[in-house]
Length: 133
Image (cartoon, rainbow, N blue to C red):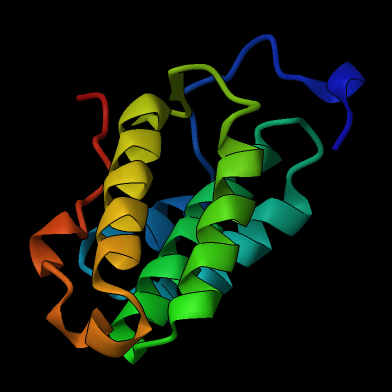
């Protein structure tokens, strides 16, 4: 991850594995989405791979929240943000800027609740990815 690899374009076409992973993510099946997004990430030679890694990590963060893993959730939110911050507002037909905002809202709620009250996390904050139609 270095600045010379920053994407200057992010075509909307997505490989099948990424499409499946995104569909599972949007269904709230974050654990299942991980495998498909990882396959897409490993196969992608361009900087669009940052999209797949960022979405994958967002799903892992949400999964940690569901499991009550406070430290894991915060750690992976930060990791996801590092990848997503290298992308434009829209990438691969996904509204990346909105995902960054959704992660910010989730992180705020996680920190507000603290490790003892993570079971009270507002599940409405698990937003699906916004896709360009």
